[in-house]
Amino acid sequence: MQLADFQLRATSQILQDLKSTKSRGAIVCAGTGTGKTLAFYLPALA
Image 1 (cartoon, helix red, strand yellow):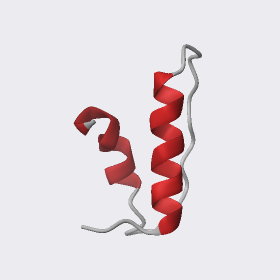
Image 2 (cartoon, helix red, strand yellow; image 1 turned 45 degrees about the vertical axis):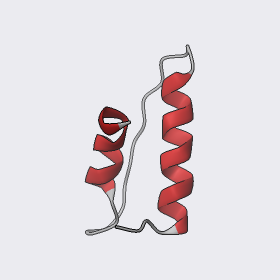
Image 3 (cartoon, one colour; image 1 turned 120 degrees about the vertical axis):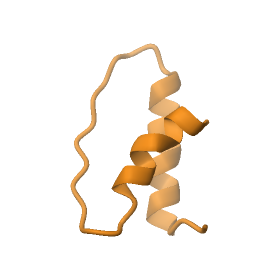
Image 4 (cartoon, one colour; image 1 turned 180 degrees about the vertical axis):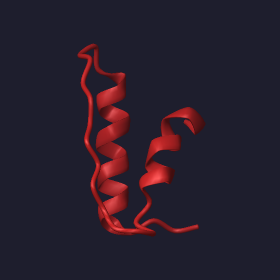
């Protein structure tokens, strides 16, 4: 499976934020088939 450039950038930022000591939330809005569910599960798979 290959991610689009914007998905790679978003995923990278999400994983970096998870490693920080600050507690932050995120709101994700995107159309069907854009990778929202994958982005949600990536930290668990990392």
